[in-house]
Length: 152
Length: 139
Image (tube, rainbow over all chains, first blue to last red):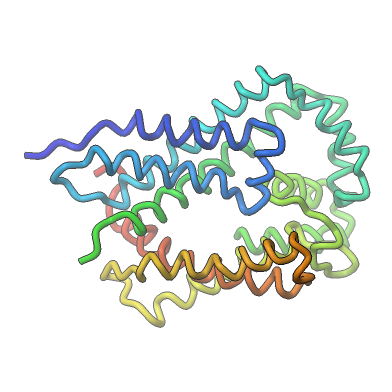
């Protein structure tokens, strides 16, 4: 019976790709294109996993799990990177306010409210990041399996 | 749900539900630049995402809904991977030619090129989602 290779290492590599793209300023603009960085991370998690597969087929379950894990690891890595680089959420809000005409007034109103509770803002941002990374990571993993699996 | 949220944000803003509308805009601000001049508007309020992202998401929705019309849901039918790359060419051209000054893209070219990519991408994702639903994750 063939055993499947470990999923942790490819998921961490995929997460590192997501983390670097999401955590580094300017590079994170890639995510403005429908979270392309997160989709790419999920895709590469599948790619690196497939490299270790010998006789067992690549399944959509593998891809979904790899993409999901890569998305979660990506969020952790990008948060750590942001702390190392010194990106402060509160400073980011202030910068956004400077370009207030670029954001919808409803968002601006919400952000002004959140400025008063920075801990709450961090929690909200992390929760939203988790949903977004999970959804797009999973999508990247599934597309990865569809593109990388052998044609019959 | 995703596409409903995109349209719900301006509708809720129009109805003065600013907190719920703001939350949706804030959610989508994580994945889209939301520039007003690059977004469609309804009731004088912009959609939660720009025109290209709108095209991608609504294209993905249209592709997912049309998938059963062209393919069997039981058989994993995936188009050739070249088609996915090919569907990204109009987006790349629209962005590239605009940056280099050879072409001035519009809201409709951004919407249309995004729609093509989103529509095509769904045909790679739908078989996977169906396959996961029918088997238990991790089995």
